[in-house]
Length: 443
Image 1: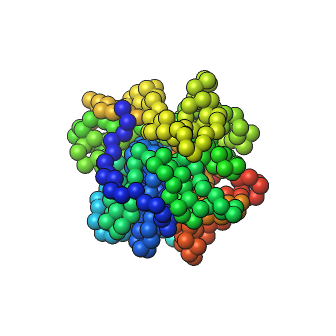
Image 2 (image 1 turned 30 degrees about the vertical axis):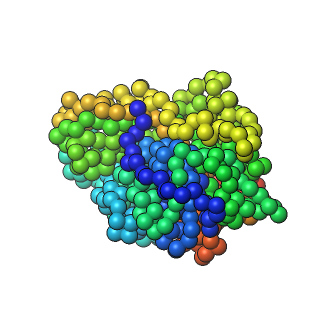
Image 3 (image 1 turned 90 degrees about the horizontal axis):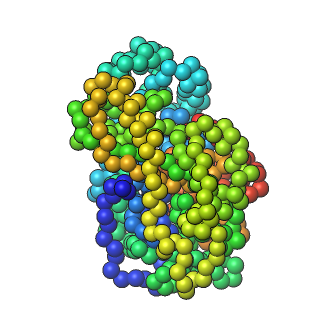
């Protein structure tokens, strides 16, 4: 079953033109739509499926600075500020709580990495408190492990994936934004070498500015216009438990599971770093760029090879015309199967670590398609060869938390405003000319 979402009502009248068109209503596209609507611009958000129905509703919900790559820290610092402001601004509950996060481990390498990261993060004003064995135990009451230590990030928090994108879009609608679901963008209209509109299945919207935040579909969309965007898609698994008398009071990471307690006594759970690869033509095309990442993480990745991804879905071969059905209409919502082994592993780890959760039961599990870059840093960038286009993709399994920051940066680039943070680390060009392309850092 897909992850739960909050449904959003479509706008009434399909427009002929817009100041900005946003493609994709995940957290990045929804946040950009909100920021643009705040400025009084005529913004149109177009989504082939439903608001927040793909990876943006299928993640852990963590909004963290802790353990991020240094290049992402300015963006997450701004995003956390925005998370704290958006409830009042939008009038919508996005589920954000500055709850703090706790990591506990029995692994010396984890402790060393967290200590090193904390020293780096101090220069950004980020608080990261190392925990002794005793402190880690005190912050995980009821756990059975003799922890070696841990780390606490008290200024981090979490939001609710099923509410966040929908809340931002609903707030933007009240400011005049137009939203159309079940309406795929088939491609860009181009005149004199720059964007002049978007072709949708309902017709042309004239515009000179487009933000493409299409998640796992972004690379396919770009290829249609001769833009080479190296993205790899990984299928992650998460699940929700049935409500139970809670033994874990705040979001917790351990080597065996990561979880987020819900108000009703249930948990959202995953096993960190685990995923499944089902490559198609796109995966083969970019295999060389992703090989170093695959090599370093192969123990946590399953590899499944078949013919279907070559012909159906975001990795498929093919071209299409703008006046005929596109691949985006053939699969309205990506809903890959959850990995039953990961679900059982996570349940068993929670039950073993917390005897009070011995009767913990599964309520729902889901898979999600995660768009990743070779260096695990997103692309939030203009594209020199096609003025008017801004890309916002490749969030590499940690985009939900930075969503409000990513939306603001994409909006700044689309309107040629002063960027809220230095956009250099997120530039598109690094992926195609090799400039600044480093191995993934801590995630």
